[in-house]
Image 1 (spheres, rainbow, N blue to C red):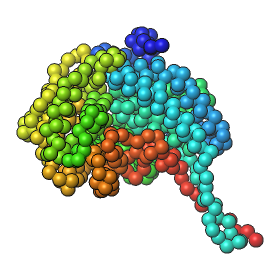
Image 2: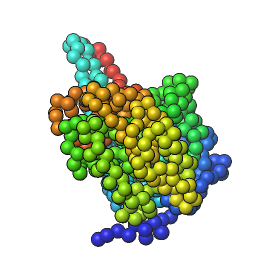
Image 3: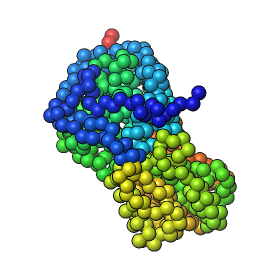
Length: 493
């Protein structure tokens, strides 16, 4: 039976208060801000504008919950049972949560269904099932010594998440941190706070004890207060490289808490001369650049194509771009929704104009009109990019695909590596030796071959260079980010 998403949207009830110690509460100072539907420009609701006072309260209750052991020292089987229940409830509320995400972000409803109704509960299920499969070690010693190497939850964790995948990025922090036994404070982006706020209540319904999961909406001062707080044991941040650098500064000026960073990207999409320029490759090229309106840190907007196949590639890509339908994200026929805000649309427009000014050849799209009723960008296609142009170096975070022409594999690797970022790359070739050579040579955290993919929950996600830190989201690596290692050395007769 088909689902009427627009009908669900009309019946939504919005909750904008913070979630602290198991209750929805206003900010201590009573301040609020508005969140809007970027697809229409209309106000959705007012949201609690938390500040340092609210951070102090949330950290206090998080620490109390952690020290009590109600979650941190509960059995793995108990935490597993609760997280599996959490996954079940998220599936039950999947359609409603997905529509809420859609109207708060301007993302396509089918993308929201995939991320919010499917992937989010699957993450809690996967980490729930992983909890009782984490083993310590016994070190080899002489008979009078026993050495135990054990894992313990790191403590109070702050998750600072972006607006482009609001719930999924929150879940990437919450699921492994809760599985590890930590208390978690989520600071959602001010543009998209609503799904994290709602899901906190569902977590309580599943059995997460009060104080173990808290959500603090607000602006950058909330993130800074969490980053500087001396009773926060770790920060996991997803967002821009610039802001990620601030969290390292906050840590160095407070308690030297570990900071996990997943930041920006300028990911290449490499098409070698032997690649088949078929529908599958073109679909991947389009998806890699225009998925989520290009508002994706791993978006492949630098498309590096060998000169022998460039004309065929560009012809097919152009036809596909022309067919993209931009519009109402609740309409199943739309291929792209809105930008997140009027300000962000202006930023994307400025990059497009910069590309024109620097000599790139505009083939399709271009600067979009700024309207109050919905912030929609035009899918834009450039040819003739040079590797040091602004739009070939800086993260646009909008629907802008640029093609750079190369003459060899060596040139492709050189151009692809010419970036301060190192998050993701896609490589298309029929030669397995070429594929492995580039996959091993590209300085980035994920390389997909003959597809555009970030992997799945079982594979770690993160970047090299200014795209990230040594920590990773997803996989068993994410769980390890929230565990610390203890050696217990016992002397006995």
